Length: 266
Image (cartoon, rainbow, N blue to C red; front, side, top):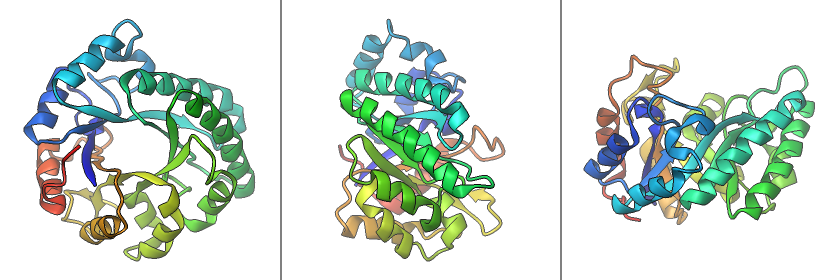
């Protein structure tokens, strides 16, 4: 397994400071979810077409690699599909330019008609997977929102599980909201498609806390992934952008190191 962190926990910092942070904690992989206070990838200066070459050089000189480009695109509503595909395509092109294997998108809400929402997600992700695969990238659906349990994820996996350009990000907190501490049954369903894992921790009332201080069995999850030969990244997703009361990301990175040890090698 490899260590990674999402820039959501330090989104206000410029690229140079993010790279220094990764080097300081000896974490070789980055998941981009904003730079310099900007979340939309299409508006990030370092991702502008005329800057991507320089950004890739900066990453290489720092000895760092990009694992995921995170997009906000969500596919549960067919009326938003065109806009979501446009946003996701932009992420695909950035990922391709930076040598990143993955982008992240959402299913999100099932609303009053879960079957219709699932079909909308399948239709959108089918188009996105084809686009991503054509550029050497895989689109990862995050287990997030209502798409965090076997009931809502099974139709997606049945339709797309073998599709080139499709995979999953297992967000262990969002599935915890559905399963509690007994993660194994859902994990077994998801495992063939898991390409990337989000680690964060919370109390039973959903208050986010430092990794290892909450109710999510992060050590047990890491042990299971290790035993199953998972060779992707476990990424700290420290949601300080959405929860500014959380302490600085440095404290969360130190806590993650205590859980995962020295598994930080490329």
